[in-house]
Length: 138
Length: 327
Image 1: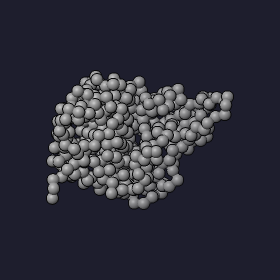
Image 2: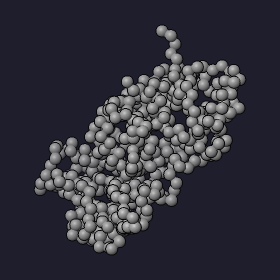
Image 3: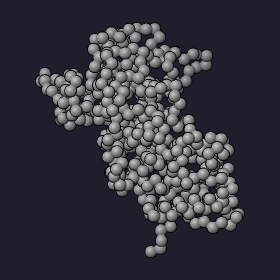
Image 4: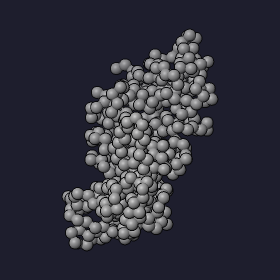
């Protein structure tokens, strides 16, 4: 059997992480192809139900990308997101869903290399814990 | 517990006021020892009010349940106050509603009653079998004196009292216009021992535990409907554009619903335990919401329902929030 290739859904903020991912592409930096990027206007816009729905629909891991603290295009969206997902990770952990499946990262528009590194790290972690089966829709 | 005659007297005074529409309290329910909420518009109706350890309903939910129909043009809304009888935890729900501007302070008259714990109906049912006849119950410190159909019986409080009441830190109402009865001096401490016990297990064990519970859920939404802080006019669980949670009752959708609700009540749940009490499938919901409460205290030093001027937890942020989980 071939090695498990995880499905990662990345919610990237329009102003930093998405541009960072774009830069990684234009700079021809190689990173694993398991990630599906979804562009949102701000990390603060991401509803925790997005993550739940992603996990239900077969994602093995979710990455949330936002601007660095203080750099948010809307000045504070990423701070709200940080609070929200900190609580959410604790809840998921308590319910027995590995919190390594829900990660958050600050990637700025100039950090193409960092984006590639973050993706590799998330994929490495999810590979270790295996496919997510807990709350999959059948 | 407060003296009943004195309590009725106080409530009568409130009902008679011109600016008060009605007072919400408790009356004897239809069957056996059950207690149901009661709404008194006249002093005569106050005479059926009761107060005993069997009064478990969180009445704060009725402050936001009243349907307000659209008014014809030029007709002013009748501004009248609603009186409400609250115990410690219910008073925190009222504060939470005030904080979220679901109600305004001028619209309520709060009658606080210090509470030394309420009886858990599920335990009552277990102890006395199916629904029984007339019951009088009295709180005697360590024991409950229960009179069933004339027969007297003493039961240790430990065996009957609600789990959340055992570790309740706010037995006295945190907000009240009129306080009926004496304040309780005794202080209890919440140690979250049950939450910690589950936290120490492995990820797989925790999932097995909750999987069994969530599979049982029939999604009757009783937990949501009885919750004082779950007062959205439109609930995400029922939205169809888009569908966040499908209608089917399956492990996946049930888990999604409970994750959603625990997040929605994060920093708002005041731990009255109503949701667990009404659950027909005996899902230990308090164990989930207590965990969130514990985390919120540990991470942000925030306690829900204590200060009506405080900003809700998730609508503020601090630049010093922890970065530990961020890559």
